Length: 431
Length: 155
Image 1 (cartoon, each protein chain N blue to C red):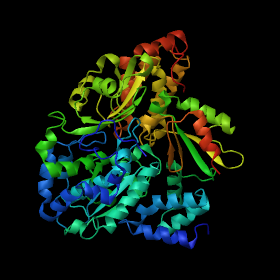
Image 2: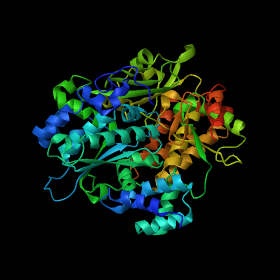
Image 3: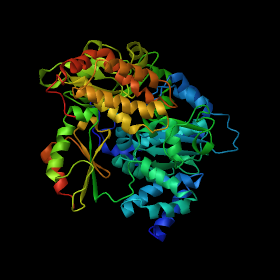
Image 4: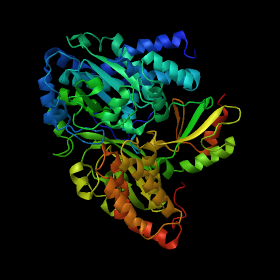
C-alpha cells in the first residue's frame, strides 16, 4: 500500500488511518454527510456554481477549470443517459498521488463521484482504473461493494431521489489511455487512440453520450469544496490556482514521497525543506516539476512557485505535480534517452509526427549518449521537436517538450558528448 | 471450445453493465488472459463471436494492450520499472542483477516456465524504487537480495 504523505492537509489528513478506507471509518469522520445533504436538498446548479467559484482546476495534468468543464454538458432534458468518467489511469512518470487516494481514500472518491455526477446529471460513472494498480482495484472493489450494500449507491443514493451506479473498468497497460478521449475509446472496447476534437466529450463522449471526464484527485476535492464553500477553498493556494494539491517527490532526495501542500508553494521549499534535499551532500542539477512530460528546470530556477501561472513563465508546467530530482552526477543525455524511450514505446501510432518522431528522437539521443553523435544532431533534434509539437490529434507528441527543455538548459551536456565522443558522467545512473 | 460455458456466462453478464456489449470486451480479454494464460487465436475467434465483431478487432486489442499476449508467457509476470524516477535510484542495476539470478534476459521466460521477466514503464511507485510488479502485487524499496528472495519464493 502507498505510504501516507509526509505533510497532510484537508485532502489526506486521514490517509494514514487504515479505517478511513472502510465505509464505517469514513462515516465516523463525517464522510458522506455533504453528499447526503446535497443530494436531498441541494440542486445541481448550486454544486456547479460552488465548484466554479472555488476555481478548482483539474489535477490530472491539463489544469482545466472543473466547474467550467461541467458547464459544457448540454442541458439535461432527461431523454438520454449521461455519464461521468473517473480517470484513474494514472501513469505519468513521477506521479503516484492518485494511487494513494484510490488505495487509502476510496470512499472520499465515491463521495466526490456522487456529488459530481449529481451536478452534471449523470446516471452512471465509469471508473477506469489503471490495470497495473492491483491494490487500488482491490480497494475500490471492496469500497464499491460496501457502498452498494450500505445504499450509498443504487436507485436511491444516500436516501435521496438521485440514482447512481459506478462501474469499475480495468485498463490493460497503455499510457495513452490517460488521455481522456483515448480512455473513452478504451472504455468502448477499442484501441486507446485519441479522438479528434471537436466534438468534445460533453457532446459526444462515452458510447456517444454527453460525458465529463474528471481525474481522481480532482473528484476528491469536490466533497470538501461543496461542504465548506468556495471561499474556504480559495484560502489555500494562489488567486489563479486555488487549493492544496498532492506533490509527489522522487529521484535523488532524502525523503521521497507525497506532500499535500498549497499550490504556489515554492519548488525549492518542497525539495529542500520538505523532502530534505539531495543525499550525501551532493548538489541538485535538475528538477522535473510536473511529471516526465514537463520540461526540467536547472538548479538556479527552483525558486519558482508551484502553480501554472509561474511555471509557464519558465516554459514548463505543473502537469501532475510529479517532482523528479536529479543530482549533479546525472547525465542529462541519459535522462533524454529514458524520456524518449518512454514516448517511443507509448505512442499509440495514430499520427505520423508522433509515431515516427518519438522513434527518431530516441535514436538520435541514444547515438549521442554512446559517443556517436554528430555536430548537426542538436539542430536535428530541435527541428524534429518543432515538427512534432502541436501537430497531432492529442498532446502526446508534445513529448517534444521535455527534450526541448533539456536542450534549452543542459545543451552543454549534449555538446560535450559529441565533442568527447563518450559520456562524460561516469557516475551517472545506469541505462 | 477454449472459452467454457462458465467463463462465457460471466463475460455475458458483464456486458449488462455497459450501454453497448462491446464495453465489456477489455474485461473479457482480462478474464481469458488470466484463466487461459494467453489469448490464443482460437480464444480470439470465440470472443469475436460472443461480441459480434470481426476476429481482427479482438486481435488488434491483444496486440495494443501490454496485458494481453497471444502465447503463454510463464506462470508469473515479473516486471521491473525502469522509468526515470526508478532509473535514478538504480533500477537498471537491479534488473541486470535479476537477469543474472534467473539466468534469462529481459523478455525471456525461465526454462521451467516459472517466471517471465520484463521491464515496464512507470508504475506509480516513484518514491519507493527500485520496485517490481508481480501480477497485481508491488514489491518496493528493493535491493538485489530482497528481490531475489521474493523471486525464489514464487512457485
